[in-house]
Image 1: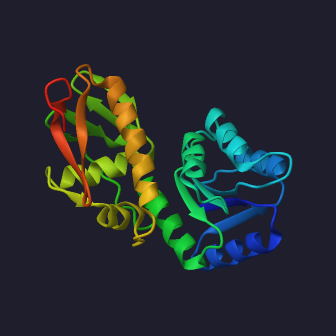
Image 2: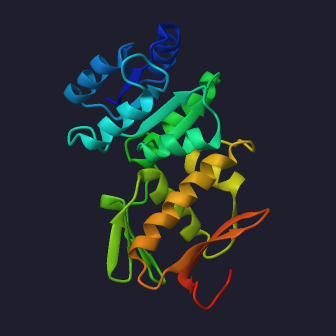
Length: 242
């Protein structure tokens, strides 16, 4: 049984989400109150939370941070729903611990696709494609049980989405992967307009990698106008200006 919680002060949106997710076979609980919603989340065994931004008393950004800071809820994936579509708003959402971001008004089929893809990434979906075995290429090792990346002798934890992006890049063996292809393989949908989502996650990945890369090597290269590729042994930024 896969349980999903939706928190939004718009009851009509909650009902739409609940009906459609339950038709997909999920158990969906809803709350129009963010404070009560957080209490429900702590008490239930939820696999995912769908969270609105503009709500009274507690906004979605603040609630996302509370979810990440609470030991009982910190690992639950979050999809944020919002009318705020600017890059700065997306950055704020991802910095709050959000895993995916859907701009209102949205198509219910897109929400269903993102829910399924995110559950798959966390190993909880019926069609989960989560990598089961430890993967190593060059300096990089991915540890699926803990969503951890290890570079040489140092490691750090990633979000499920960050882990899957690296997994996809690694599977392509240093060949370029387009933004469109990343959206398809990681999120499970095609959307040529959603390149900001990729850019934000790549930015976060690079920041985490920088913290554990002693030589400040560049491991994810941007191919301008094309996409990204993984450099498994890194490019030393002190000697290479790429």
